[in-house]
Length: 285
Image 1: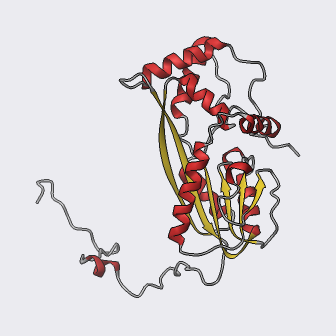
Image 2: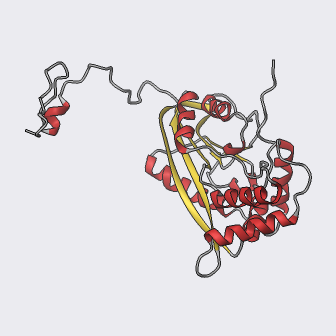
Image 3: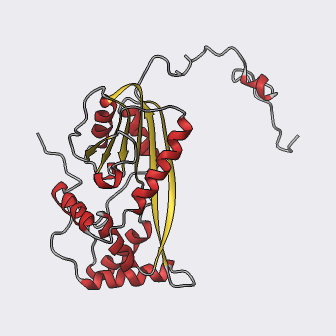
């Protein structure tokens, strides 16, 4: 049996996260923003949760976000007890998972019936500007490309993961954010302070030449800099929401069970596909 290709070097990812936690200038503002939005979304649910759990690569940043929450580290096997929680939050870590469906299944099993699952992760538009600048610079300098920025899923594909994992009432939406930096080097410094630098398993282990990043910064500025010289960086946070199945939840009706006609609701005539279609003469009459 072939071993599946791994996306993430988990050892390197843990090292980068530990370095970010030690950094006095750690840039965890995206975690702070996600935690604030989490509270807003939970307020809309209008339900209290007594046994929440949070999965995160930065336990210190999420401790205390939800009162009484069990905070567990992001890992391939999550330290969650089956049926223990009425809310599970996967916080800005799912984009690094080799098996995202497996992560969601573990979270669903940890939920009580009718328990709520919420995840936030970086989506496909994240760092699109940096990705393009690095690819163009490397192509010019070396004639080839190497993996330097994590590939991230599109919202439609990410939403489908909820159904595959067995969640009911799945919803996916995105919250893009544009952050402006003095230069591409300042952005890359922030990514290091976020613990979000290149932890791809297939990355080149040899250090890249500084000329690559200098050229990428030049291209970045040439294509994206504003009048003040600052460059934008896109961070797209995709939110996934689903419920552990329960008999009380709404379910789609069976085909053919409708009791009202859509044509009546819209005030239009219903077209019979078996009828002879109207004739259109060549003169338009």
